[in-house]
Image 1 (cartoon, chains in turn yellow, cyan):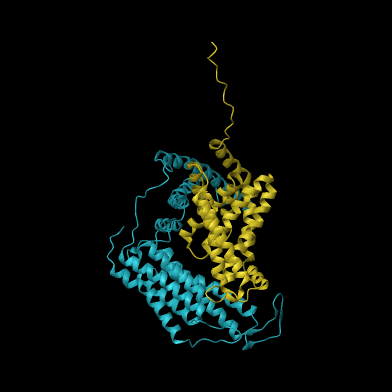
Image 2 (image 1 turned 90 degrees about the horizontal axis):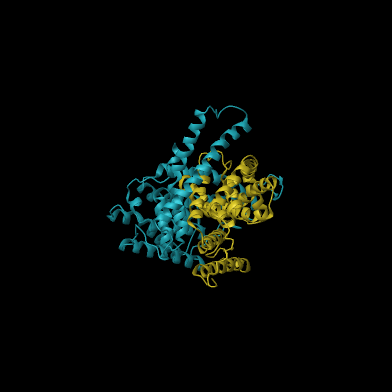
Length: 243
Length: 309
């Protein structure tokens, strides 16, 4: 087994055992152990596991460069829109990359977008949650590709991701700063950001409807230039032994 | 263009010259401590202990923006906490209004106090992260990722991506100028038309950056990227004596904090009644020790005469 696979297994076990421990022994919570730390640790471990999974794959230089530059693109279109929170095409770009290049490329693009844009807008505990949110948006878009959706399905997918992203971003804030932790308080925290999530979702859906087909066509063209299947039909060797 | 600049600026203060690994570990321990313990006095002192570092790094102006943001978030936190929790015993206000989801509206002193303590927690965390954002260069952050044995390919990709931000912004500006020279007026028409016009910048930028990826990939291949399993680095970050002392002291801080939290030395009860302002002597000693160790970063950074890079 590869080293990164072993690390991946260890991380997955650690994350799951932390969660099981937290649910099984609630009397320990509050004694060197609280939900703010638990959520941050588990999400951090999940993100590292994704990175290791990417690392263990054989990715060629072209794809590496593509993911980093698309991360930059998604990050820079995010920065000028920062005054209007969430009305930015970053999620749209990430979904398109995931859709064209597959789940892992989508995840990495999302992760890099979060990291790079926060070098400009400021890091915080929210960075790892953004990595997870955007990463999973790209990842699920890569899975959705197998269903061969039309543009309307993709737009609906973008709309839904606007809300899921909001939920992921609220988890930390809710788990570490609100008491008691009930579904009612989570719903209120969610209502507080529902306006931003709606803008995010609607903007992403609109971008997909207006620009989606063209963007995916451009990306597919690039994809076809460098990724091709090796069809194994070697020409028959001319037999010279008889002559 | 203001957004071309990093949040980071090299102000040549001792804090900026600190080893990035140490700054990261310091910030991480403040954040973990803030999440670990919820004693109001401790959290307030933790927040106050970040302020000398902010001033030593001369980033107070940027820091103030972060803190203001935390205040806006804080208002929401106080409101939700005081509405959501009915388990306090000192009722301040009970107007007899029935709220959806939450039942009867009761605002207790304990819930209000809890909300304010959580705002202090948020302030401490955001203040620590602002030090991280404003005093560690992005490339050095990635160096830290490598130092902690995190996957290097992802770190390299992030570095590459960060480096191309100014280039791509320049590209976007150039495309915009070119479109305007062709007679495209970006500020005319209804919203749909405006989006369509801006889309023309986007698709051109996408194609040109895709061309760029090919150049980058080819230059990486020309330098034999990924040909060896064990890679080498141009710059090496080394930890010298003072750095090692700081690193060990931070690990100690966290161990002591977890220990005292489990043992109940630093314990505060919010509900049903506020209790725990008076701690056992051991608790106060531990708090003092933690804060002195955290604050020691500034004098140690001043002591150190590190050459730039």
